[in-house]
Structures are given as C-alpha cells and as structure tokens.
Length: 505
Image (cartoon, rainbow, N blue to C red; front, side):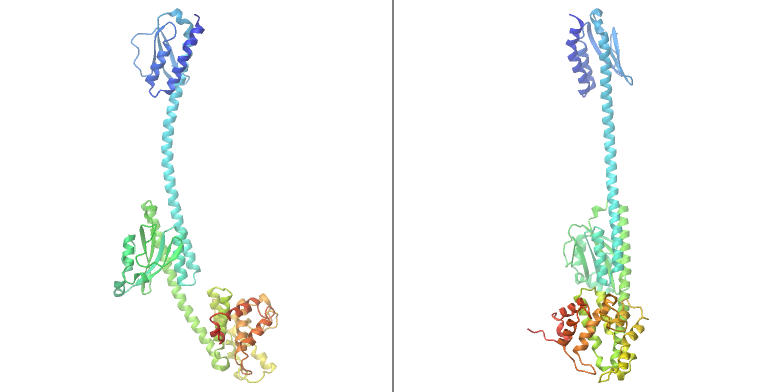
C-alpha cells in the first residue's frame, strides 16, 4: 500500500480534528481528539499535542514538529515513531498538519480575544449610551424649563390684563415646560383671614406629595382662591379634592407680592423625571425665577391698571366739559362711545383697540370748548363763516390731545372723524385708507347718533333716517365693513339700549 492511499484514509479524521480545535469549548478535550487522529498515521505509536504551559511528555519523542505561526508559538507536536520507514513519507505532511493546527489555534485565540474585547466594548458602549441618554434627558428637561421661562416672560410682555398674564405663565409651564399641571393660588395675607382658609405660606418652598396638596385644597375657601389649572392641555377650574393625574409631587413656589394677598405658583410633576439632585436644583431655581418674574408682571399689571383707570376717568371728565357749554350735546359723546364700541366688537377688534375707539368717541367733540356757545346753541341755520368756525373743532381737539401720550391714536381718530372715504369730509380731505380705522368707526357712530337725536336747529330724525343715510353712502362716504357692522348691532340685545328701539317681536 503506497503513501497517497494511506494519507487519504487519515485525511478525513485529521480535518475533523482541526474543526474540533475550533468547536470544542475546552482546549484540552480538543487536543486529545487531535492526538487520536494523528496517531493513525502509519509508523506512529502515539502522538501528543503539547501546548505552551503543558507538562512535557514522560518519554522523549523520536520526532517533534513546532506548532507555530509567523506571529505566535503554541507548543509542539510530539510523536513516538515505531517504524521510521513507514513514517518517512508522512514527515512533510505532518509539518503541514502542525502549521494547520497552529493556524487554527491562532484563529481560536483571536476569536476569543475579539469576543472579550467586544464584550468590554459592549459594556463601555452601554455605559456611554446610558450616560448619553441621561445627559440628553437632562439637557431636554433643562431646555424645556428655559423655554417655559422664555415663553412665560413673553406672556408677561404681551399680556394686557392680569388674567392674560396668569394664564400665559400657566400655559408656558405646561406646554413649554412639560409639567403635568400648573395653577396659581391666592389667599389673604393677614393672619386672621388666612387661618380660616389655610395658609399658602405653609407650602411655599416645599415639594409636597399630592395627597397633602389635595387635603390643603379642601380647606374652607381655598378652592375659591384657585385662579386656574392646566391639565392635559386643557384649562379648567380645580374644585376641592380634585385628583391631579399623572403626577406625584407638587412644587410650590412663592410669588412675592405687595398686595393684600399671598400668592403661590403650584406646579404638578412626576418627580421620577428629575433624575439627579443638580437637575432638581436647576429646575427649582428656574421655577423660582419664573415666580419672581410673575410677581413683577402682576405688580406691573396692577400699576398699569391704576394708571389706566385714572386716565379713563380723566377722559370722561374732559368729555363732560363740552356738555357743560352745549346742552344739546349732553349725552351725545357717551352714546357715540357706546355705539362705536359695539361696532368695533362686531368687527372683531381686540379688547385694547375697542377700548381705544370708545375713549376717543367719549371726547371726540372736546374741541368745541373753543367754539363760542352762541354758535353751538344757535337754533337756526349757521352762516358759512359760523360753519367754518364750527368745523375747526376736530383740529382743535386733536391739537390739545396730541400733547398727551395715549396708548391709542386718540388725537388722529378725533381729528379725522369728519373725513369721508370719497374725500368730501374735513378738515384734511383724506380718502379711503388714509383715514384711521378708528376714525372710520367713529364717523359712522357719530352720524347715526346725531341723526337720531335733536340738534339746536332741528328735531331728531330717528333711527330709520340714520340707517338710510349710512346704507345709501356705504362704500362711498362710509367704510362698507363698518356700516355692515353697524347694521349688525341693530339685531343684538344691546340695540334697545344703544338706539332706544324696541326689539320685542
């Protein structure tokens, strides 16, 4: 039997043995498997795969082959040769087998090292991902708080009333800040009053469990002091004992006030969202800042309201001076003011704009203080000179009022209320869009009221005559939208008061 046929008989087991080096979990078991396969080579009595660190064989082998690659040495293959002649043809073959064993062991070792490295990298990546995720969450929460602060401050700048201010801040906390709910509590600051309602101050600066807050809210009168609450995107009142869903903690922030009320800004949250003490400290600091800003905004609103009320009273007082000199205009400015406000409401104007046109209408004839009373009360037709003098009243009134910095274009509205869209009015002969929108409203209200009621030179013509005049010149002398808004006021519940008409069917 020649060598090639013999090698073919042992090739299969040797290949299986090499595969075992990769597959066996225990390297020792794999080595024994290899040794049994190599022992089948003719001329050999035994084979031992002696790896680095193994105990040397007890008998010196006749042959040995180094098990190594270009990069690593793993040991040697020790063979006991009984028949050198029979073994001779396989010496080169066994050299290749030793190299194949070394390559397989190297692959096994590299795979193991890669596995360990990958495991370590996996742990590092997991740790990094957790840290990045936590940091990202912290950044998102901090950014949401900063957005709440920014949106809240914007609400303070743009709010025209205390209610708009408070609601704007509450919306900012929930919509921009991502909190579950927010509401504003108010209670009397005096000890004897607060004792019966529960003292807001006992909660300020605390992180309070929901049941405690609910118990506190159920104190007599406390529910009445709740301004508003923002829950799940909707703004509702909070009756005593109402549950606050999705939250486990309420943060209570004091709102400093010089008014006879203590205020507290309450913010409902899930405390588990705030994963670290520094993050909670940042949150509390920003909320305190928002509370201080709210206090400033409330104080500013209170001061502005006092100034506004004083200004309104001054305007009404100015309007009354004209009526003292001209009994025929007694009540005229007040009625024109009411009609102009109703028209502006029908046009959908904002509250501030409506108030501006009402106040302008309340003193639109203030310039008549400079017109001789003989002209104002003359029962007959005025001469051209007298009429020219009377027509100066709108300019005179505007020139006086320009010296006062109103928050509305009062002077322009008064100066232009006798203008007409077709340029036929006075004193400037303005046309169309050159006329102030408030003046367009005032001119319609003034014409309607003047025609309805008596003047020194004629009796009252009635509402029908006023409607006919405005409809006939709609779009030419008078703004079409304003005339339509005026007509719409005739079917409102206010009509009976505004025009002295009976709306009973």
